[in-house]
Length: 342
Image (cartoon, rainbow, N blue to C red; front, side, top):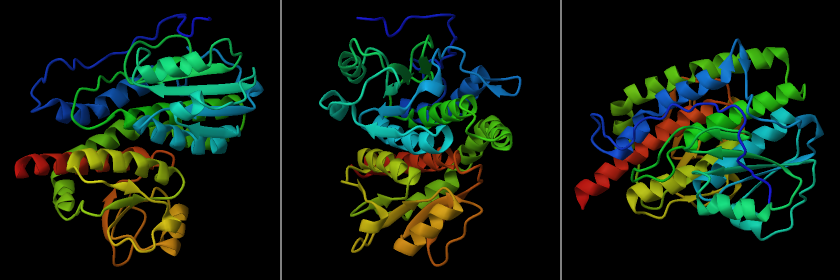
């Protein structure tokens, strides 16, 4: 069996010490409010001299004809979001699957196939199951982990997950995968120089944008008070629907209620809908198909007669990072609210 974790020059991940609270009230709070620092660390490692660099990725992407992006739970939601972006930015037909489905199906795994495995670390059962399925396969593989060192074809966002809310590294993994897709798109000459410049500027500002959201947490907490978790469903279109899967999982954990993601065209009859929208075109389709009760959206979008939580927008590719931070703050407020009631 080939060594999937062979290393070339190690790309050092600067972790935050998660064994100590360091002034935070609990590990959930620490995980939420250190994400902007981890995002900056990741961006500083991989954007140098005005270029996105993944020097540890040793794959010729021009020969890739298909991609499977796989993960379980919150990581599946991240995989689905990444698959949407991969097709647009890389011009590679991409399929998101749960690791369970992937290991029990018959995917095309030839030398023109790329498999991106999203997991907590290389020792997780999810990762081991995926690696077992790929044994003796000529497919190219990239690992995206929450924690651990970066090595050959291994990307790590440097977060250790110890808090009460599931997979807070969704935000950071989405950032990593978005940067990877722009990198591949540039390698394959799919994206323009203008888009590359705009995306580089947006990536470089994302940590500041996250700080702005977390600084405004008291305002978001006030909005969270008005959200009734009983009978709540979460919705969105395209990449926003992928995010709604993560949002439903984290809100369910926080509230103890069964909160489900529902496709926009299936919302008829639901009376308590939280919608996520990342750009004007997706918002037009959302409004055409449904009338949500509350929406999370960038500041350049207006909705009439709907309660909204707006944030300072960036490019549509990265708006889901900011709205994820908003969702996580809402979930954290609901978690504390549930604990106070119990």
